[in-house]
Image (cartoon, rainbow, N blue to C red; front, side):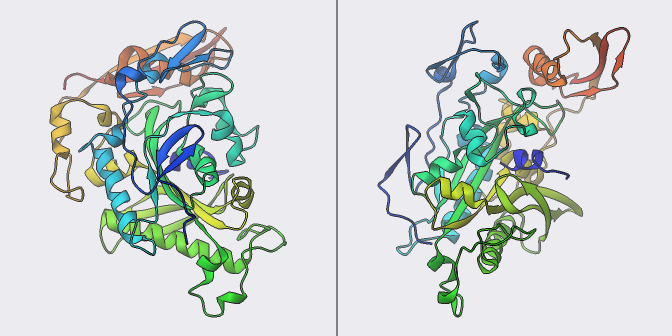
Length: 421
């Protein structure tokens, strides 16, 4: 969710009784414990024929919105976050372990449920409409997402499951998975990455039970929307939810990066939270953004059937945290099957400190290319997808150098790729 939350900027406790299985949009998932079943690659194997896209055993009819490529479809089902000893698995397990130990119910059981095997194929309604994202919002654009057709897409964020999980009766959960966005080619961007979504809801009693005189406070009122609260929230409720959110995330980052960590909060805007914040940490003398978060829009919570509760949500990128913690310089390395990379993360304990050792000492090769645009609707991301399809992960970086028209539009690019590994 963190990356899409950033994209959406303008400018910048008691758990309801549930059975052991919760049905989320036709998918049976297990509550209270992590569901770590990976989708086998042979099942994920697909064919993008002229009329349909075959994915995860289902056929999706193509239409004028279909733009997912064979290269991207080949990534579905890899589930790097569930591969034991993969660096993304290590980050996921550290976060999960922290929430399991820090937040427990009355009988000592984990308060947060973890869902890490939900299908990445979602509806447009799940990915956008359920999160109150306007119809004309830039995040919906075809050139920025992978659509199977006008109704189905590869999720652009794990927030796509937020409404369903709340509607199923959950009020404290983590959702982890691979997400897909068309993007530039460089060391920090990749069309497939991994996110973790966190949600916590509170009833009036849960929020105010430890506050002196809390029995006189309420969650809701009818008033104006301000920079600090929604029109339906009381200021007392918002302050406590915001404190709970920032306290929880500060403890999480301290758990990952160590004591003495400096943290700061930047006010921002997201369609599905208000007030909204980005969290930055000071790591090795540099301020780094690590996640987006905020008080959930009450309209979203109400529509999911939790009208009597208020809550917070956050989203973070696993690659982002792993690159910082393990000093991994290139996001493409997470997809490497090279034993020299993978063996560095086979450690006896998930919290063991690791510093990545480079695989190659050779400088990259650089090539320039330019071409006339084939149509007025052609975008830079179309070229990036073509380059990834042909060159794969050998291409380290593509830079758009200029744009000019004579007599037709033309784009020149600079391509970097390694000379050896």
